[in-house]
Image 1: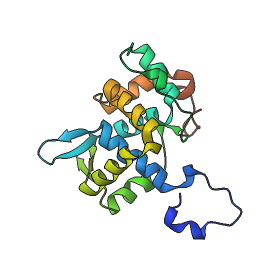
Image 2 (image 1 turned 180 degrees about the horizontal axis):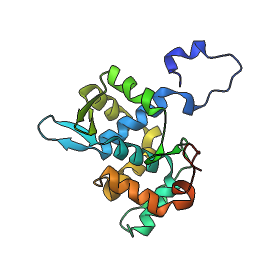
Image 3 (image 1 turned 180 degrees about the vertical axis):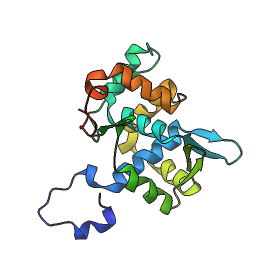
Length: 191
């Protein structure tokens, strides 16, 4: 991945897609924390506990059709899933605990180094906190009309499965998407 700030180093004549930009992925992760995260009362910050949970919420954001299928199976008629649209935003791979993106190893330290999030480990789980600077950025993104579809999709995800644990989300993915995810060899791209 490359930062928008370093595009002058990008080879001339090479196609650049949004998937190659770290800011593209950073904005989505920040919005997941802001919309799907729980408010920590003591710290007054949004948080998500567990890398598995963060990755599975990200999966349903990136793959809107998979979320639509899940919503139908869970009989979530109160959601306006007809407007929950979009194609695959950015591909993920099948990994040990389901859908995964190797770029998390670059993306999460990028966000933490810029004081947008903090990452804390408690025994076996990581907790991701949206810091004040990250909160300010998400406020701006939520006001931007270019993020309307993503915002709509994230609110659907929060209302339906946002309270689920990472393990429960993983089990849902494995149970529902056997052909597309569960039965795929490790490292295969999810289509």
